[in-house]
Image: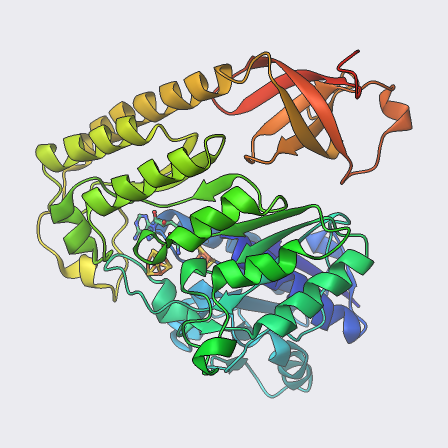
Length: 449
Ligand code: SAH
Ligand code: SF4
Ligand code: F3S
């Protein structure tokens, strides 16, 4: 029996999909890349913005057709969109057989069995204490892996559905995380990305006595000790919980990558308050100043929302000024999307579409210009690049990533046929740059071609 899996959304969902593959393959399902061939179609969904919903609904057209063609096919919807709608989903999408939340991946085989036995649609949306960390997992990447340090989110930013669909913030005990990373490393993994909606709050909810309680920088310190692990990344950091100790960890622990993704969302205090972000513009700028002075070669990226209800021209200018001051290496920019059930959906002051688009254009021009300047400043330098595979540009080029998370396409010393395995770190001299990527040539230990 074959299953076909489609994943939408963030890295959390990508990682959950590894568990979906894990539990299905443990109950003898085989993966296929061809939906026509599949007996089971699984969609792991996202609901963070309206565009995520419409992308999903577009793809479900095909599922509806495939179900009509062969009614014994099973269609399953998991993840945040499913959790958000719960059982209403079956009246909205009558061709569905199964719906399950991000905390119910382990129940998928039982749900499939129930449907196969003919008892009609099946679902599970319970809140599980530690949802999926212990489930079997099947990774697609040999050298890099995600590791979940916590689940859920309790911040309730006023625009965001994540706390509604992912349950409360819960940290995994650090010995468990360290064990998982060690076994990944035994398996050939050299780079890990620690995942959580707010990794800076890691450990705050653990009921250990104060001395035994681990915080995020403590966890980084333990992971930094693991031999044969080369790189440690993490995402996402929340400005309200980012402490001096994390900046020190980035400065002092050689395996911790010099990249911080620190969503600002807005540069206006008025809007930050309405967003319920829990920090001010001044606090954010102070963090960034501190970061750049302690970790000079750090790459800083961010998320910004444009057109939040009540955003006036002044507020937008504060965001532009913040972006100019912070000189981000990259920024994900989003148009505000009103999500039913969130506080922001009830806020007055919707910004007209034309204004939002104009602001977005201005912001993009600014952040892309700065990102290009920062990348151009790297031309002529030699950077450690971890190989990820062949470059999409062809022509014998390889593709890899710097510690600062910049993608580098480069000409290897040896022809690409003798490809050094993914996960090898090589030295690359940067020759040119765009706002998204770097281009270069590999050099040997003496800096020679
Ligand atoms: N936990 C992370 C973010 C997860 S969602 C954090 O707090 O940083 C990723 C990004 O999507 C957010 O940073 C935000 O910029 C954007 N986003 C979330 N909800 C949104 C909405 N309703 N409209 C527009 N953008 C949104
Ligand atoms: Fe959403 Fe805010 Fe939680 Fe991030 S911290 S997931 S933006 S509620
Ligand atoms: Fe991620 Fe989307 Fe859920 S961003 S947490 S998959 S709503």
